Length: 370
Figure: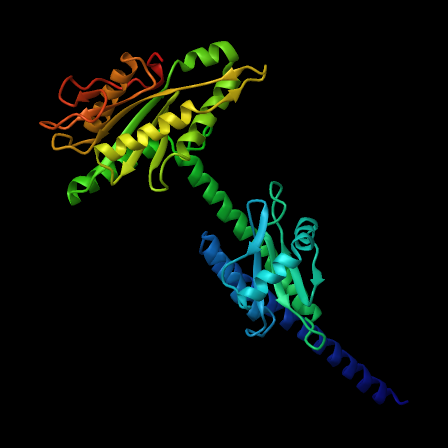
């Protein structure tokens, strides 16, 4: 072979190598562009539903087939279930999850791509505190297998989805931490102050009703003194749970301070607010806890009830009225509900306190003697 022929072969080989490199670089640029655009869309929201829909849209782009059935499986507590934004038959997706729940759980926990019942499964990784947020599930068939490049791209997409879900969860936890009481899990005082002002303003502007219940665990100091503060904390958590199960979903349960709780009852008049307070009081009284030493521990609550009335204009006035009623319930022997009396109206059944009978005093929260 002549030297010119060898040179021509060398040129062709170099051109072929450059074309291969160029094709690889073009594919890499396309991949990075796709991931960058997807990351930008995912980063524009911290709503988990919106993230789910963005991920599903990105799957169709990644495999260049927006008609290919795909859906998300997301973690809800300790369970896995179908997520939002599915591009598959919902009943088919739910059947797949139900049939393969344990296999999917293992797949998510070990964070390995798997093929299950004609679907490719791409785990969405969690972080150090989470076993995984779920998985991307894409339909495959014998003649429509995903290419290796598609598998690689969907794996990268699942990683992006994991970071987005982690950020959304961090935000949700930070929001929750800002408005909830760490010990009992109910809303905190800061949230209560804001919500009471909003509900009272709405009720007065629209002529609606609103009730307020202040309650205090009776002789709670004795529980701490006799059984210790860990048992006292457990009692507070049990009381909070009992209160939550005794009210409606729209009622706002908050820890007012120490062993005191406050419940905003939207739409309730005096009679209805008293009914709620009595339901709570009876539920707490029926609780039977056991201490670490095996002793039975019972607790009762005293309740003070106020509501929107003609001479209640501010949250402070509403609180003062409920607080006076709570003090009256304590003085009258505890484990009872005392409600205010509307000016010029008849008292509710049982003991009652007039909202005009005393000067509003400073509420001392946990400092009040039980």
